[in-house]
Image (cartoon, each protein chain N blue to C red):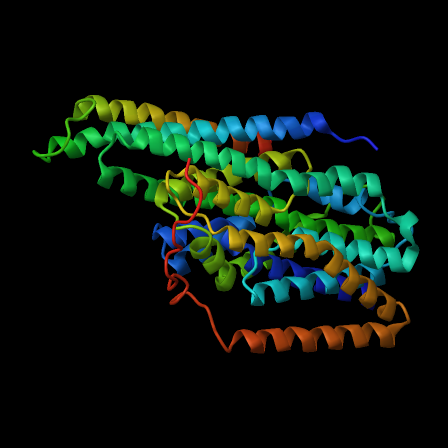
Length: 78
Length: 373
C-alpha cells in the first residue's frame, strides 16, 4: 500500500502558507486602516501611520491577499 | 436505463441534498454567530456558491468512482444500500446537532454494502486508507494547526489597531472567507455524489471504467447540494457557531480561511476529505488561538465520539440495507419504505424543539474554561 505522503505534505504546506498569509495581510490592512479612524477621534491612541499612508498600505495588503486567493482558484479551475 | 439505476440516482441526489443541509454550518456557522451575515442571507449565499463550486473540479469524483470499491464486483443495489445507510446517519446526526462527516457516512455505507454483497475482496483497502481514511484523520488536525496559528497572529497584529475598524473589517472579510468555504464545499462534497452516480453508471456499462462524471451528473449534483445548503441545517449551525467557543470575527475569519485553504488544496489533489471535520478542526483551532478564549472540550468529546461511530454505523446500516435490497425488487421496496419511515420519524422528532433562522443564535455564550495561548 502506497501512501502519498508527499501530497499530504503539500496540502499542509500550501494550506498553512496561503491561509496564514491571507489572514496576516488582512490584519495588517485593518491596522493600517485604523489610522483613518484614530485621526478623527481626539482621545484615541496615536495611529501607527497617517491616514493617507495607512490607506495605501491597506490597499497593497488587500490586493496581495486577493491575489493569493485568485491564484489559488485559478490553479484549481485551470 | 433500468428502474434500479434511476432509483439509485434519485437516492444519491437525496443524499446530496442531506449533505448540503447537514454541512451548511461548515461555511456559515461562524459568520452567522458573529453577525457578519444574517442567517437566511448566509445560507442562500452558501447554496449559490455550492452550485458554482460543483463545476470547478472532478478529481474527488474520480477517487470515489474508481478508488474505493471494485466496480466490476458490485451492482446498483449495493450502491442503493450504501446510500440508505449514509442518508439515515446524516439525518440522525442532524437531529442531534452533531457535525459528523457526510463523507464518512457515504464511504461507510458503501463499504458496508459492498462487503455484504461482494465480500471484502471487492473493497480497495489501499485506496480507502491512503485516499480517504488518512486525510480524514489528518485534515482536522492540519486545519486546527493552521487556524490556531492564523488566529494567534491575527490577534497579535490587530491589537495595534482601532477596535471598531478591526471588528468591522474582519466581519466584512468573513463574508469573503465564508463564501470561499461554501465554494470549497461545493467543489469537494458535490463531487462525492457525482462519484457515486458515475460509479453506478460504470457498473451497468453506461460509462467506461475510469470515466469521469458527465455534465448532467455534475449539474444535478450541484443543484441538489445547493438546494440542501440553502435550506440551512440550523441545528448544526448552532452547535458549530455557538456551542464550541464564543467566536469573534477575527477567529471566524481565520477559521474560514484555514478551512477553505485545506479543502481546496486537498480537492485539487483528489483527497476526498471531510469538509465537516476540517471546518470543525478550524473552529477549535481558532477558539484555542485567542488568548483566554474558552473552548468547550466536552462538546469536542461528543463530536469525536460521533466521528468514530459514523463510518461503522453507516456501514452496518448500509450492509443491512444492501442485504435486504439484494433479495429482489420486493426487498428494495422494503428498504425504501423503512428508510422513508425512519426519515419521517426523525423529521417529526426535530419539530418538537425546532431550531431555525430566528433562534439559531439564542444560546448562552460558553464559559471560558481551559485553553489560552
